[in-house]
Image (cartoon, rainbow, N blue to C red; front, side, top):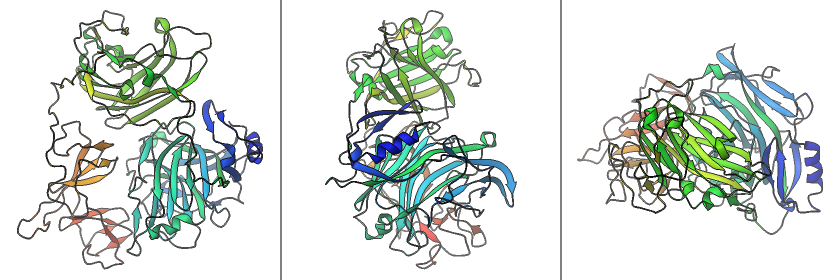
Length: 617
């Protein structure tokens, strides 16, 4: 745990000195900014053994947060614990009144109100189906939502390991709210079960979201007068919800009790230096990435000795990783592997190893940082869920005095304990955003063309791991033209039309030049598609089996009058006798509506300005 007394002393003298460098907290590097940028004006360090009630209100309710959540919030020592320098919000599987779970929600309303500046919290979060932890702000203007505004500094759901930051404000239609349309709901992939610092920097012009040293989203506050509530003083909320409209209602009870652990919450006021928040935060202080500096790309090996079969395709540069298309995973984890060898490291240096892995099936992957003679410098076994990106990150220290080779290995064949994939089953594994760095970075996502690793009989520089002879599938050093995967069901072809055809009301047409993030929706030829991950230029109808788009709706256009008259596929038709709760979606005359609150019998097209329905598709 961080020495909090020392941190307070540092804050007190911050106007007298500039502090740069690395502060090690809990075994992981934390970068310190130029100290004169901000001064600490309030914090709760959660010292002692009781919650500071001068800072926090504890809510007691079971209304479900307007999101049909499944927990009852209690003021109970079973759900709120302060000890060893942290706050623990604990969700439990226990019946209370009409709810099957209990948890806690704290707010600082009328006790602590924060102006412009920087607010952050250092936390470890649970990751399981049904989890919904949040760290957020609401306006201290006494107005009801959405007129008070809402800033979600952090939300995560289920076991996605994605952190979402967003903002909500009143729209031109009274009683309704808009999410930001400028990336404010875009997230960042990390291991949320480890300590990270989540925060925002806010001034009169914008809100900037960051995790540790990485700024991942910005929302302007000057482009829409309705965003004014986002500039006023705000109070803090911390809670751990179970289930709801967003995470769904499939709860992994085996993961409960679950804990949201908070090291501190801190608010800093900016010291005027004539610059705007974020503009003077360096993006690459002392940055050195060994993968980016490598002259090689990944080499792959598929071993027939283990019953493995398929291809491994390297991407160029090495930071873009590789793609494995296996027709059989085999019976040994080293039967399919990829490696990047001979990194140019510095002995005694601590590096951050980071990559994003996506598997077509539930799959274990063994990750190894290797020294000479197969020595283990660091190892991890990752549990990937089908089609869910896994953000892997760990700290690696190269031993002082070591002068041997350092290489990165991924092993993804069969035979893992507790894995039930048959040796003859197939797999597509994509590994990208591979970095092994020291210093501060805003590392970008790299998208590069694949290069098929040729001739499996060639000899590469990497040494495959096997107790039996294996055939190395090395990488070429030349940026050759991609060799198509012959076992893929389809191959994407260029689209001559950069926009979708028939438009679905309320959903923007697909645009080949636009960048879409996870959750973005587009219309194309009368159908609605949702992005499963970041994408640009991929035609929803020509994407192939492994494309980023999934079909979520279909509206057939009546050619006589141009009106959408058929129900929307996958969305139930509105039923005037049914009770709908906030967040539920219905189709009506080819359009998709979402309930803003509880409603029954209100026709979505005849509701008037104050009606409960919002048109979403």
